Length: 188
Image (tube, rainbow, N blue to C red; front, side):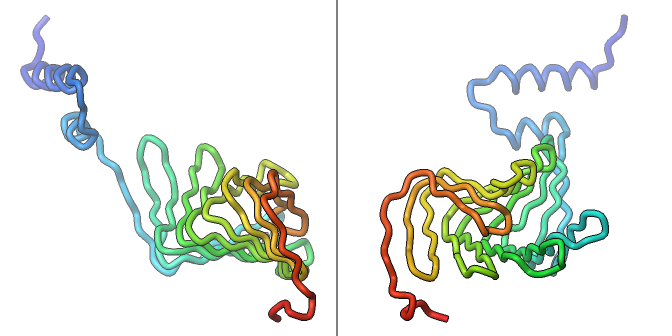
């Protein structure tokens, strides 16, 4: 059996790269010929529908579609999502500086200056990290990080939270303090 010099060289390179104490991922990818593909879209608007009804509209200035060992979509320069109910009424809004959607997990990771507003009640969530998972019916939004929720009469601080996607119902896992506000002093 005769082995091609090209395959022998490639096999030797893989063995050397795999056996070294510290592998530089970029160098290993170069040796193995692996390439990450990134597609960029600007001024993106994505409409999510179920049964012909709009459930959410996402807008972002930049979207990266990354083809790698784990494919994902990334929004590196802000993201805004409007959520709608069955009557096509705007229920809630989400804003953040960064979001990442891992396709194989169907979970969106949202971070940096996250704000979710219930448009009917006026409750507003502020946090630095949030997950959005549609498979968690009734608790689509969740985090184990610090949160602040402002209602018309209170500011509630805590650690960890679960909330419905429309943000009509929410639960703080560990409350760390509540500040009562006079209803007349709530900014309109």
